[in-house]
Image (cartoon, rainbow, N blue to C red; front, top):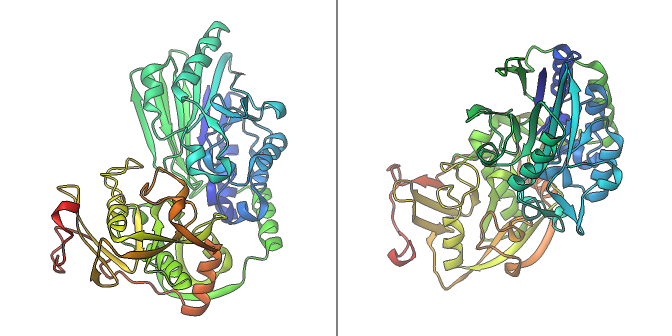
Length: 466
């Protein structure tokens, strides 16, 4: 039996050739022993996802005909009704064992299930789907959901599936921590998502895989009759192209009218996950500068996870290119914080302090502020705003995405009570900034580590505040 596993396609639809190659790769590998499975965030975010409310994914789904998928947090970006429509229109079975709305399993009225049984090559395969419990907090349109403990949901489903005589149990897990399912539940394979990094590992008797986000990677898991398994990692680089998918997505892009050129970039600007999560970056500075320019705030802040990866920005830059950087329908807001609160907020930018992603990640891109962080002591050494030391009693203004004040998972010091005004959506601000100021960001020492002696560490924050 063969499993073909993709996940977190997100903005791959904005590159028709890439998603067309993924479809062609799947078609070239599948046979009558194959289960094609997705593990969430396969309808958005992205530019076309915004204009099509996720329906651009149907071009891929209809060509590939997956067997199963589970909703990720971003599959709720366009609201409950939009996702219900996708569940009804797409060929795969959608599984959500731990998602509830108003006390009822989400989507049960239109065919979503907690688990299903699929037969392939003489096997009866039980498949369970679970979603990250953080979904209501990190996806504002899903704020009314109740997402229960995924380990308990899988354990309950597993008991039922074993009673029904399945040979193999596969979990579709759109979670940051699916190791706990492997450790606590009787399952054979966990197909992961949500975290945008490749992984193949064994934990006890469970095989775990997770493909890189963006539609570049596909995992092929082959389960043998003797219980052994092999894993092949495929990329789309040399894959055959599904012309039907390419054509359908190109039609959608033309119809959306997103090809207006607003600026030109002479020095290509990288926008990989590694770039955005490792400290100061040109793409992060561009976004934060745009927020501060538009609002006139003292500081601009963009969270690293809100910048989506993709090809470098280079040459003629279109409206679609800029939407693709922050493809969310969330406005830029202005907040007021005291200097003491600003210091605490910037302390929360370190992955060593806030447990989101990897410990060595840095979560804040800044404009109008400079930060020095001690990675050995996990502490904030220096903060300056407008080139001056922070006064803990003075109020400062902060421009950022409306997402950050409503989530407790990133920068919890910032809350809705700090917000004083609301502006246009993020990508509209980027478009206006690009038209008026151009796009040529540089690295100028906004975020530094204490072992970097290229600039003096003067005006350290008071010891009591470290």
